[in-house]
Amino acid sequence: MVSVMLDNASAAKIKTIPLSNDTIARRIDDIANDLQEQLVEELKDKRFALQFDEATDSNKDCLFLAYVRFEMTNSLCEDLLFCKYVKNRATAEELFKILDCFLTENGLKWEKCIGVCSDGAQTMSGMRKGVRALIKKASPNAQWTHCVIHREALASRHLSCELGEVMTDIIGVVNFIKTRQLKSRIFSAICEEMGAEHQAVLFHSEARWLSRGKVLSRVFELKEEIRVFLEQEHKYEDAAKFSNDNFLAKLAYLTDIFGKLNELNLQLQGKNKHLPQVTDKISSFTRKLALWGRQLDEGRSDAFENLHEFVDITDYDAASVIPVIKQHIASLMGFFKKYFPENSSQYDWVRDPFNAPAPTGFTSEEEEQFIDVTSDSTFRLSFTSQTLSEFWLSVDRQYPLLGQKAMSILLPFATSYLCEIGFSAVAALKTKHRSQLNIEQELRVALSCFKPRFEKLCSTKRAHCSH
Image (cartoon, rainbow, N blue to C red; front, side, top):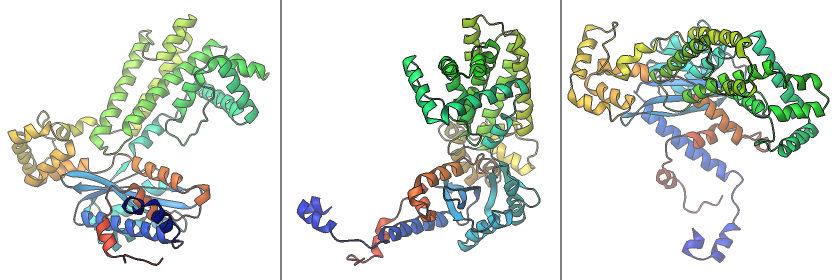
């Protein structure tokens, strides 16, 4: 600013004036406190939903993150509620105590909480001693949702013995290449010499949602380069597998099915996801599984691109591998029905009230309001130009019984995706060079959707501060 208003020489003199060692930290604290104050002001006396999770950072500190969703200016707002350090054991009682203290200190009422979302860990989801149970005592109307992304990952993790062996072999080969620097360089040189698009395989991680699909896809793409490398390294037993059509056919199928599962996972990720939206995606995928099963019964494999191409190129008779694939698809369908017992049609009246009947569980007054809304041409016209949450919030102002019923479905989180974003931000902020950083305030400044009120903050400071 000085260089623009005066000249570079004056700016250079300003730069020589030292700041106190904690000036920036104090400014960050001021901004974070202002952001929290704005959030609390907006939250008071409003219905809200929570999602939370705990994890250990790079410094082995246990962090507890919570996000909140609430109504703000005719739409739903999602923001970081807090990031707190867990000083003792991360028990359900300790985590609930952190939640309860924050709400109490800021004048927020548990009665306004209508939904909570977390993963399926016993500490979080226990019906008797978990955080879920403790919240239920404080807010009986709060409905708990098991994160849909976590459920999808649990439903897709099971493999039959034959496919499990292929997966184990792939992970073993990847580790053989990746865990030794010399072998990684040799493999990269082979890939470059053979004109491959990529020069490295990817590590597999059970904790990462998309890991299996990406690892398998890269291995299948570099299968010829891997075979040459293993022969050169005298790993003839593993190299023989990459020359075995039966092994490669199973690998092709695994690449295809986990690629499709990754597509589903990506559709479930993102902000502003609600239960009707994600149940549609799950319902669509289970119907596709049934379709693929019927196509395999007819001897068709064109739904699985890599497998279909492999069979065409090699003239491989897929009859021996089809039963294994059909068994896996049937198993997937069973696990998806186990982890997703919800019927997506129960949300039809929320998705499209003008073409769906009123649910059977409605009271007489709720059904009357439903008739009023669906008979109102103004609402019918606005429905196509608004999001679901915006539409039902507008209904809520005129027909509170029906609006609150719809918002009890749309307001709760369907996934704990925002917490995962928060922990990614923690990893970016708290590096090995800043391992002692207390990031509670920094994280709020990094993630909050509110804008700091700089004029208000500046008005409380002296114009010429000496430190």
